[in-house]
Amino acid sequence: ETASAIGMEFTVATVAAGMEKEIETIEERCTILHRKRLFIESIGESVWPDGTTTTRYRFLHSLYQNFLYERMSPGLRSRLHQRIADRQEQGYRGGAQEIALELAVHLERSHAYERAIPYFQQAGENALRQSAPQEAIRHFMKGLDLLKTLSDDTKRSQRELEFQLSLGVSLLTV
Picture 1 (cartoon, rainbow, N blue to C red):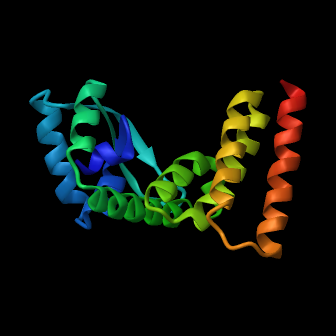
Picture 2: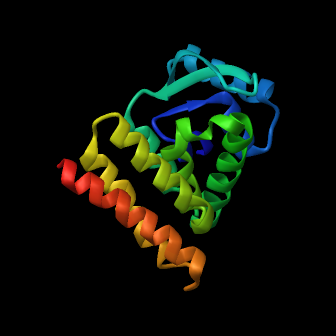
């Protein structure tokens, strides 16, 4: 279930963080499932900027991932997304912009909107750099939607202006 909250692909370190367990324990469980060809397959190694090295897995089919995710209670999902985002931020420290979209989604799903907003901005900028303006538009629009959840102050107005300017560039590119 925890892996399903991460997505179709996941690392053992992220699952361990979500479950608040040791990486070695989760690595053993995933290895057993992989060897028996149950639900998941190994797709290599993952090394994070903080030095964390674990195996990367993927669900054999999206139906497995969707079923497991949907059977969780909303409260559990929210807590898992929060723990996952916290661990990813810690593991990627200065390089969190690399996984900005992942962090934005986990933080949004944990209802940590204020923390998710800058990551949606970064995800949009990343998409623009990769010549994906339509994807950038989606990220900037999502950030603007989340800004509505914040109190109306100067900081929010400044963030909204940044999003609008970035959105304008994306729209002109399209």
